[in-house]
Image (cartoon, rainbow over all chains, first blue to last red; front, side, top):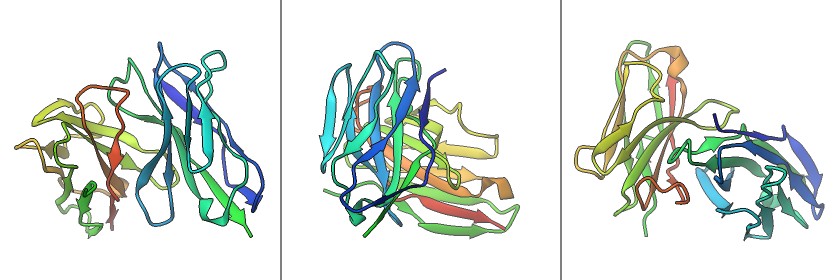
Amino acid sequence: GDSVTQMEGPVTLSEEAFLTINCTYTATGYPSLFWYVQYPGEGLQLLLKATKADDKGSNKGFEATYRKETTSFHLEKGSVQVSDSAVYFCALSGVDSNYQLIWGAGTKLIIKP
Amino acid sequence: GAGVSQSPRYKVAKRGQDVALRCDPISGHVSLFWYQQALGQGPEFLTYFQNEAQLDKSGLPSDRFFAERPEGSVSTLKIQRTQQEDSAVYLCASSLEGLAFRDTQYFGPGTRLTVL
């Protein structure tokens, strides 16, 4: 079945550092890919998404490109801020899962001033 | 407009008690989902509604779990005879369309259930 694997955390960076959180997936066909973020004490929020190969999703300075050849959707940001500290989840929705979101385990990001 | 709301935000139950968790989706959203999120893990699918029809309940862990959406809007997740392993955050999400895997799911804040 479909699955998502993302890098384990916590990831600790200094402010203004470059961020990469790796995400790879296994799915039939061409799933839609998502990054959700969960800030402390808040619910899950969609950060960005991509629905077909080579699409780039972007929001709030974060970017991720749908790479079919490497089955990846890595999250990047050029200069992180303390306010980016949160848990980041990679997820997919595909033909087999149809309407369900299949989730990674989440990566906790800690940004130090 | 208003997002997805859930109530209560926190629930403490003694083992063996029944609980009911409520979800108010975004108005007009066809699809409604329930997920269970254990501490430090990603959410796990429980069940899916398209309007009032429960199209998939394959993720419900046991027959003690029951969900309904009788009028195609508000949904209730009921857990009977709660057990300690039911302790988790229960998330509700809604999306505009039905059975559209490109559609975005919008999440509520969750209900944190603790079973003592």
